[in-house]
Length: 73
Image (cartoon, rainbow, N blue to C red):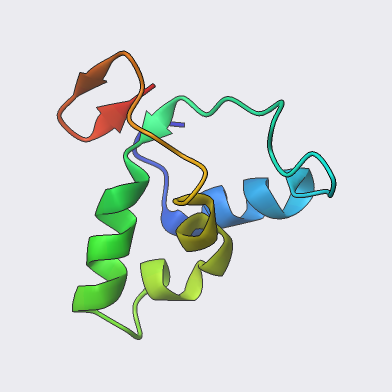
């Protein structure tokens, strides 16, 4: 999902966010979620700030083995 808007990630998480697994079987190849957190803080009324699940998912994500620019696995 590289270069997707925050709202698309948020919709993806909404479909896959079911307890008790809470994304344990989900692997996202895409943008670094930390960048959305920065965007949300810089513009609190922007799309990234409205995408609450992507900001919550940040606590579960980590920079994977591969990282280049804004993309992370």
